[in-house]
Length: 235
Image 1: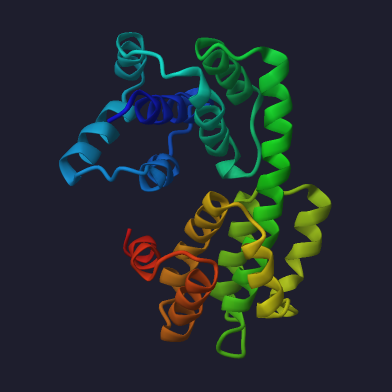
Image 2: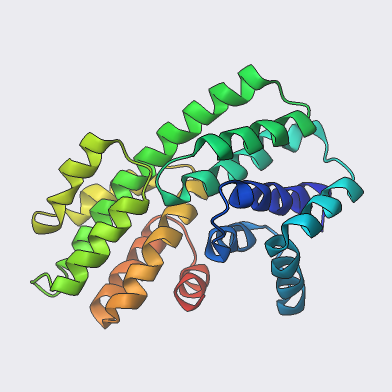
């Protein structure tokens, strides 16, 4: 594993530990997005290390810093963990600032980056909610369980209060699929993958073949391979 990949995992875990609420599923997204796939044994070893905060901090002292050109990428992935439950907390900002300092990035610079990343995350969230509403209506009706899952999804997305209220009614009036797919194509390639990862659990929970094919068709339309899309569904 390269230094930048190792620091991506370490940085994300540091932020995940910041507020004392540990969600293994949060950094599974980071494991998934790494360019070089980890073996099952390596993934288990990393998850054990990441979940043990003292062990994690000791490990951070022992690894070489990555080249400076990777600092922004590492910090962006770490901030993504902070937004996984809807918003970054004060504790997460403090830890993220400390990570930036370790990587040689100034406080003013990382603050500006966080603002830009949060705007990008909100754009992804709009598209995730739009496609989620399409999935809920795939069979022509919205079941109570689908409505609950949709509301829970909105609570986890990094949205302003006004956005969350507006999107709350979208499940009953979803946007056209072509409009949502077009929005996905305008995202950066990695952002498309992040967005699909956010949708995959809904597809699995609904369990229908129609929803599954909608998901796979969307992936194909936005240049994500069927193999990667299937892997998202099978996580």
